[in-house]
Image 1 (cartoon, one colour):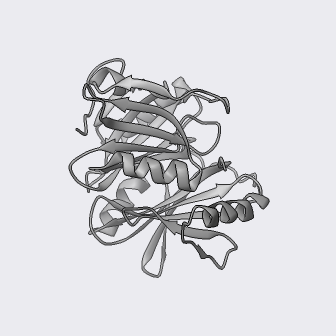
Image 2: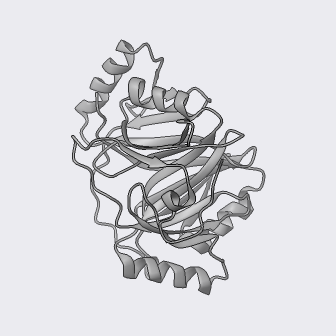
Length: 272
């Protein structure tokens, strides 16, 4: 079954929770709240959670279904595919991908009209990316067994899969998978309103003395404008805008594995 869900939050592990919390407080305008072993970082439209552990890994990704009845349908699909899942007290369920990451599927959250605090720029948590030596195994699991939809493939001259972009709703990708030598977290992205607000975000990074690590640029797959910064652990954090909106019957795109695919305007970060 195709999913109809959006990314709601990410939980990362880090050997220095305080350093990462301070970075995202300054860079992404997030409020910091300690809850037991977990630090919760929030701003309108975006939520991260941090816990002590190895650098460059994420513990879980949480997705909210567009409608409550989709949770039961998804569980039926998982059962038919032989995917083990556990029920959550909140009414959702959790599965693990082949590399041990938790994926939580949750009920819709009632819409709220909370005001954005003064000085905090708009940025909605929209997608994340991982690195893996075996991207095809992850693509097969997420598409065939979980219900994600493949938007684009990036292949090398030998036909090997270099990257894949998967969606869970109408936006081009909720998850990107990059071929790389080790299993690790790559980046998350917050989608902002438009090109002018992307500029305002870049100005904000300059004001808090955080240098851009990549961009401003324009991706090939997804066609979005973006820049990225690097947190103290070396994770990348992206601000983007104008991401492609996909029709349900959009054909899967095919791209060459080269720098111009990842950044049509110039230099790219190549994971392999």
